[in-house]
Image (tube, rainbow, N blue to C red; front, side, top):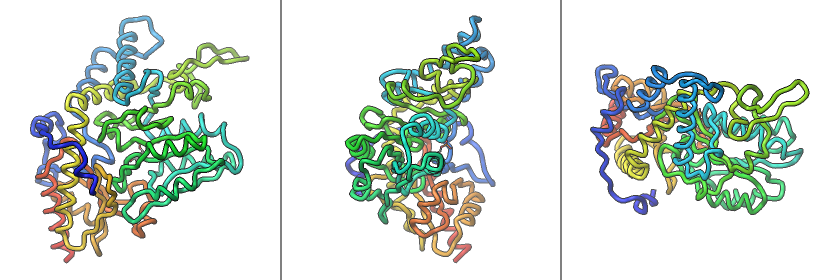
Length: 416
Ligand code: PMP
């Protein structure tokens, strides 16, 4: 974690005020104040997001884009305003580059089907890495089955970093697409996606960055990242479930085939011929998750009111503090010690099953995740079945890290 010192300097978030914005945090679990350290799976929602959704349903709900009446116009305006906020959040040059999806998973499947599939044939290669989430593995396996393309996997080292030299050597004339995670949910590794994108582009390949974990934790500027597509999920970014975004370059979106057919994505339909709508509507068949998009817009407002740089610095402080304290527990081994790391500590305790750790911590009111984190190849790489994972959000505190460590101390007492 030597990258630590190079990052944003000290900061001061008013954590007590921030915590008061999240109603769910104010409760006891098993007679202890809740410590929520499962943010990488899904983060909690501030009141402003909950209120935006509630107010939409109480005052403005109607279907979007199709009505001339006032409520439909209000709903449409709010839905499109959310798109603009997301465009700003990602540094996109146009709202047309923002497609609402159900989440990162759907965004990746959309790119696989609509962009990559028509461009690949037998023997062409799709390159991913060992540290991908299943949602950035399985869509490519399915695509390879359909097309005869070959899935290549760049290896990672013992610290949980991509072996870049080996990855670059795997990029060649047959490489058509590279899909890589920005911040690993299983290891916390931040990948040098710009360098990877440059190498891929030099070989004529296109690039998707899975930003499910990075979007809530660091400033995203899609132009600076150099990718062609970027995917994120609302529910990890303080917004509702069931909503996400696929950002893509406008010229690529324009030439892509639709993902699903239905209403909204057409300009005209006859039985002889259907003319598709412009982007982004072309990729938003059917009635969208209007309330989800509005909630996502409100979450962006909330994040921006605090400042993503301050959030990044705060979480980084927690990560370093936890990295200092966790080794106090006998037999604890952190899995993933990348120099560039954020948000997540995965670890194992000698001789104790992660699920037992999770159950005992829950008794202490501490919510962490145990299992393979939808990244089974990472577990296989490290020769383990599962880890315990503590993941941070903007409302977590050093005192909560202390509660985690105290809980792990209890685990050690019980298991010896
Ligand atoms: N990629 C990463 C790195 C993730 O952490 C997750 C969620 N755990 C996903 C993709 C999938 O996101 P979703 O389930 O919201 O589609």
